[in-house]
Length: 203
Image 1 (cartoon, helix red, strand yellow):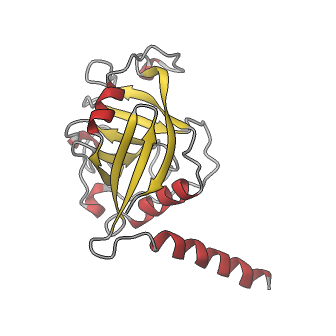
Image 2 (cartoon, rainbow, N blue to C red):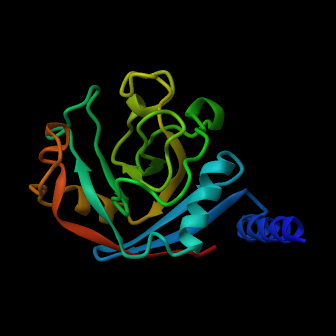
Image 3 (spheres, rainbow, N blue to C red):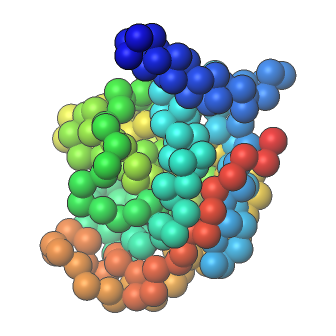
């Protein structure tokens, strides 16, 4: 009986996730409301089902509500190679309460790190969970086969901003002299994090 209940519960979760997909093109549109304005994002369930399914789970569970964009990387402040420009958000927790997900590389999905693309932050391959970033400008160094990450597996891109890049750029240009735990992120932590009020499906 317990096994049957668990299977039924998991089936309902999967049905909830996949029922929000636009049948015409395999995308899910979400609106991310922030204290700086709204950002609309198309998520590509057909190309990155694991990563999009995870993000929808975070949104539907309201885990991202009350989170923030807390880190901004610019060409001037970046300590990596090649240099990039992104804004990073989530709950900013050292340990996520969610299990990590399998890595869907850009080689698998075909979603490259272009201007406005949303992608998962990670350490080692297969450790992404709830932290994400949005690209400003094209960032090929984050794609599979490039050396931004020593393992050359790149990061898991899974969607595209369709409205609100002005908000993204405004966040990226905000003062960033907050306390940092390492020299690598020095000058990248927002003085005043930008609140993520909610993330909800809008299409």
